Image (tube, rainbow, N blue to C red):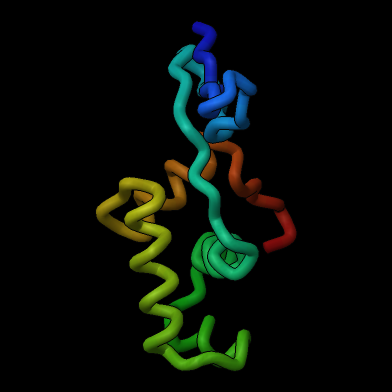
Length: 100
């Protein structure tokens, strides 16, 4: 399945659209644009870290971590941290390594 991710601007020039990825079932999904901090937090969640641990490791407040996690859930259309990880793995936003 091929999806055109470009649109034309007012002068007819193509402008880049959202990135996309194809999962194993041939379904094309848009990749959300996560910030570097959100990716960092997602990786720490994947390693089983709590909000409190993430806050301590990154030198930020737990409230800030909660804000980032809420943004991640929204961008990944997930209802839980676990579902967010599954979505991120399917979209190849993160990879789990054996040395975690």
